[in-house]
Length: 345
Ligand SMILES: C[S@@+](CC[C@H](N)C(=O)[O-])C[C@H]1O[C@@H](n2cnc3c(N)ncnc32)[C@H](O)[C@@H]1O
Image (cartoon, rainbow, N blue to C red; front, side):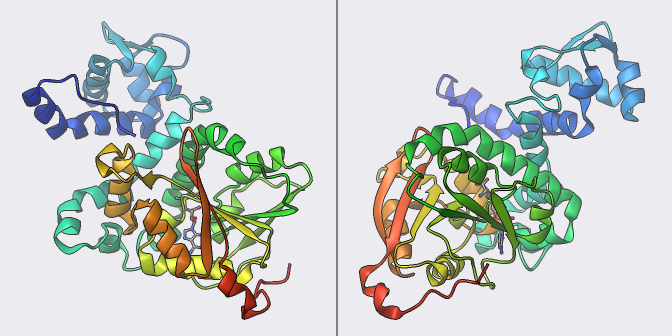
């Protein structure tokens, strides 16, 4: 979510928004080059840093000078040192801002924002200009970018997990499946709170290849658009449905319903657009969905409609200090339709 800009004069506001990409791009370059790691714990001459990073010293100096003017890094007499903000860009920092910034700097994200005007004219998501299969097909064909994306998503969700997971009681479930669960960061946090449960992590094959092994978690690769899903007592779909148009969202929800038992519960973790949309504080996330993937953030009623059309019924929406947990159960008129079509494990 973006910082509020209410305290700027109108002319300053418009001017600063018009050129905000200069700031973003300098930060992206610093993160992608690994500048914060190169600075280390010392004050280092710019020329040494440029030599270590294999870049042009003069160009690097101008980028760092601009970042320093914004409050990230300190530059004095041709030397660069850290401040509290630039330290956040070091590898392993628990805030996860380095993987997050690297994800936002990815060519496919930047290219998709370059074509935002085309997206607005045509309604087509930017990634589809770069791969006809869309964003995830592009990532499948570009494993290096895909790894950076997965690391960024993991960091982004880790920042939210502590505010989401305590809001729900996972202890009644024996098998919890995280569908599109990335590297399993949410699933592991959930399993910590449900010691009697085991987990199934379902995602694209190369995402799972990077998931850390765990004796409580079984990994299963496939596509939730085309493959059968595993049977579970509880399904987690965190930041998954918002990636997709209504048509594809229904395909995914129906696939989960086909695998579920009549007693299963499904939890969608999403940013839900409030009734007064002007109060929506994740409108920037909605723009990522527009520019990249052709998905959208939805209202509670829009989620209820999707659930209704896919054999589910929205039982409640739990507001957490971060996102909303939409709890759904199989629709009662759907229960007579027979056995689950889950893949056997
Ligand atoms: C926005 S990320 C959310 C990741 C994780 N659930 C979280 O909240 O951090 C969307 C996830 O859906 C996965 N995904 C995309 N297309 C998929 C497909 N066709 N089948 C299975 N997983 C898919 C991606 O690999 C990615 O891990």
